[in-house]
Length: 105
Image 1: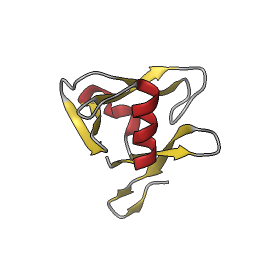
Image 2: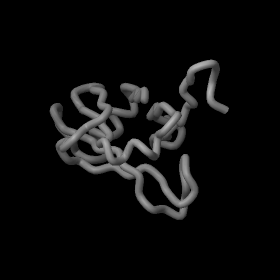
Image 3: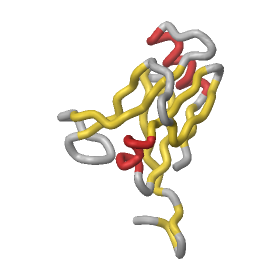
Image 4: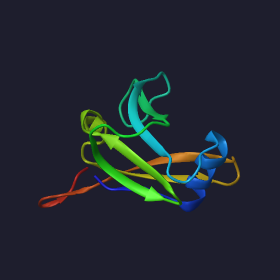
């Protein structure tokens, strides 16, 4: 699973959560009426150090990660977190990842 965080999105996290360099952001599936990649679930965030990270990336001094037990949510997809200037908010962009013999539909 590929995970990309834009610099502007990382700056948003720092500002909104009062984070300093070296902080951790855990991304995890949570029950939600809003829905994201799977009906009834969306991505939650927590400012906590990793236990068993399966995927992680660093952007602007912040480490973003997902734990092993949470990867089911992203199966077959990569994640980009981008900043939306007009809304002063972030957006999760789910991108199908290539599979053997082609791209997952």
